[in-house]
Image (tube, rainbow, N blue to C red):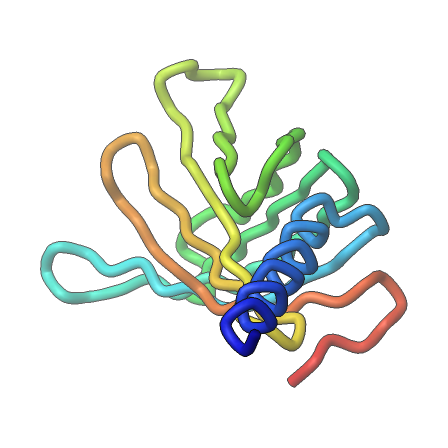
Length: 135
């Protein structure tokens, strides 16, 4: 009986987090990501996200100011399981894949991998628009 209850609880938890993948209402997130260079240096980016149903918006600003800010928008069916691909209209070869892994309490691990293999992760805080993000 205990095993069945444990399995049921795990299944309910998975269903609960899977429902968040759609972000049915406007959800805003923020965090900081470091991209490490081969020489050990890094570039730090302030990240802001908006998710609403299949629509997303990802904004990144280099804290050094040396790299132009980005504002990427698109649509994705599954942020959590399959992940998403953001392709650039100006260059069909250039893209990055991203996904979100729930960590509880409105936190997600955001993972990003570019076509050239460059990758980074960030722990981001998310909340429905108008609500304060968890800390």
